[in-house]
Image 1: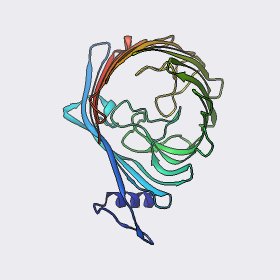
Image 2: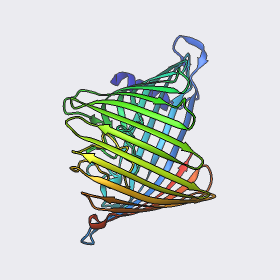
Image 3: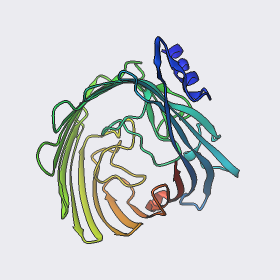
Image 4: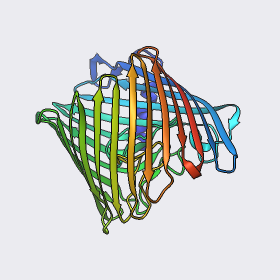
Length: 354
């Protein structure tokens, strides 16, 4: 696998505009490029008034070959670099609070019909494995995945992942095993959208010898949405939740509720729970319970929002956010979190897509 991944990277980083495909004289390998430049700033203040902060410049460059007979390859290079000595907050940095770069994606892909199979390092989005893109470099996983959309209104997802990297890991600068057993996390998902305005998701994960099950049903139209979720992670640990959103012209009102029996995990990412705030969630706290109330106002390219979450067994949190899109490529985001007795956190991002 390592030799194959190195071959992909050498091929895609070649500066010649094309190379001939092996054994196919008339086919040329064309490479599509995209990416993002991101300037990020974070400051966290604890309850004693001590502050840590980091100013970082980074982003990613994505390379992907156009398919030849259904086969293609891709790679994404990520980097985050502290500026002007502002590196005291490790949220944007590696496990040693240093700048770092990583090849977050390096994969082979084959498409036939409406089925996609991918092998290698890749981005993957599901309830308990996801990018959780709240900093400079999101989570990625290493392994195999298949997405099949052959049946109208139905998506089937299969995955087997054994390593990951990114913001939620202990060593974000490298890919490390997802389980102490070295066994892969197995994922099976079904997404059903054949009913108008309705989405049903069912997922199963094999994690540490347990079955993690997740189901969510959501009904959504122009007036708003209502959703319910339930998950159990074995050994009597479960959670259920309700989420309701009302749309009134430019204003949206939002409320949600989660109740935990035992303890629950976010998994390998930010978690799927309806009451999750920017920092606090109901995970890993015995018999927690949370209530969310919030509002969002959108006018042209400006969106402002406030969400307040009351936790039974954790510190309450209020999040204030504002986002402005100058155009399709350039946007800014400002997020401030008041975490009650856990302090305050502020983040600012400038994002340029190219």
